[in-house]
Length: 293
Ligand SMILES: C[S@@+](CC[C@H](N)C(=O)[O-])C[C@H]1O[C@@H](n2cnc3c(N)ncnc32)[C@H](O)[C@@H]1O
Image (tube, rainbow, N blue to C red; front, side, top):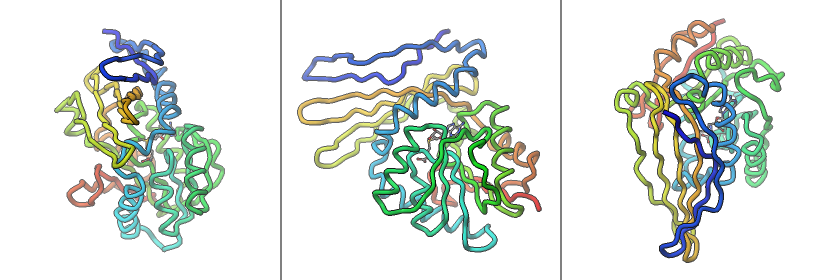
């Protein structure tokens, strides 16, 4: 089967009329493994296009920044040596965790492969008077991050499942080389141990917004293999009398907790600890691993 992968398409709905105003089509071959070559390109385009809208996928992005920091801060502190924390947030996006970490008083360097996300993260930090360094860098090499000796390297909200198995290994090794001995790698991914079996095709619509920024956010998951799916993310915004649909497309691979734990063990980390949402209060399984001395 060949699955169309659309980049951003904007649908404007006026009354009962639907007008397709933007559409780009590329094709991904789901049966052959050719899509791996294009996976990074597709995902980069996804985040470049999404950067301006990213906050809209949260009910209240500012509240999410605070909430995540309140959960992750104590988790880090319960495993970190020392209190003056230097953190590299290597898939920081527009800054959901970097901003919260800086507010906790950590010294933060945020990096991401998406220039548009980094540009917005810089603006968000400046709007909040937070001093954070940001850099564009692909986490499979972190070539642009010359600094080492971080207390914590973080990669949060399901960034790792954008990588194929080889890229995952490269990324964990790149992170390991930036962490001080005894320092932490902090990651969160979706619960693919469950999702791989369930194979859901939809993430139910969420109805967000009050007074002028009403919107519906939902996802459709098109499974293109046993452990891979194309995500169609829709953000439908109500402005005035019009509804505008923004459609973004990305790809994920189901990374199981054992796979990630094994990669960490083979890259110089102690056996990772996993914290499920009921225990941590975070919305995804969170993993903490200590780099060997
Ligand atoms: C779901 S977003 C999460 C962003 C941020 N941590 C947050 O929670 O808002 C995943 C991020 O991973 C980044 N990413 C994906 N692959 C990457 C790679 N190879 N190197 C660096 N960043 C990458 C994307 O650009 C995106 O910003």
